[in-house]
Image (cartoon, rainbow, N blue to C red):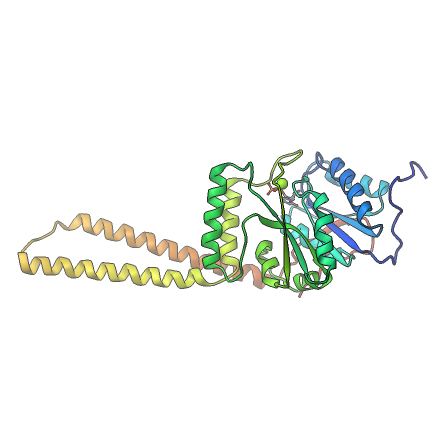
Length: 332
Ligand code: UDP
Ligand code: MG
């Protein structure tokens, strides 16, 4: 054997794993070395029976070769590699469905989810009172506009959506087996994980932490992504936008009828003839707008139904640290 792995011993085949840590990685070559270092240190202090599942989400940089090396040097770090970029939600799901641990933690590769917090989170889970422990970040240091916008978003969102979502609460959390099993029964294609975590319910504890900025590499979120994510959040969890579009339609009709009546009565009483083309243009554009919005809402749901009916797997594996890992997960 070449260089002996330092640190924790290799896991046995049938070892009882106490804690699995799932980390989705997309183009994280710059973050990985530090991540492995921090995780090895933190997790060894928590339990000797841990495993880390690094999920390469179809990275185009050196992430995958690095994962192979990490696994070779630290056998407690397993890896899965998806056949292409399926998105963070799918990468997390791949990790979750392959986690063997009694408890499963999920965190980001860029160390924005400080692993030191696990030492605070795990005891809450071990008390047996909670099935999920979520970390909630404070928005200290975020641009004021971004903070205000997300406040507004969550306000609106919680009026619309049937499950309650919290600002600052993301995917950084620890789940017990019961919660993991519950999550793996949800086989939907459009996975809005924030909502899914909330949907499964179970007693949930919250631990606050200070916002940290990314250590290396770049964020994969653009404004457009965030906008789409926002729409996903609303549409994934209820039918209220469809109901709202009916109300919207009724309102527009009432206004139009009232206005028409007023025009007629004005003509009868005062003999005024209002020049027609301005009002016509207004009416046509206003109704055109309303109809497009409503159609868009309907289309959004229709598209989702289409995606769900295909029942495609949510990810495909091309490689993993073990040979017996199935190419995809059977959910539901
Ligand atoms: N990620 C992923 N697939 C993607 C995009 C992101 O697995 O398509 C991972 C990424 O490697 C990181 C985590 O998801 O571990 C969060 O991504 P990022 O830091 O870009 O998001 P932010 O922290 O800015 O919300
Ligand atoms: Mg990040």
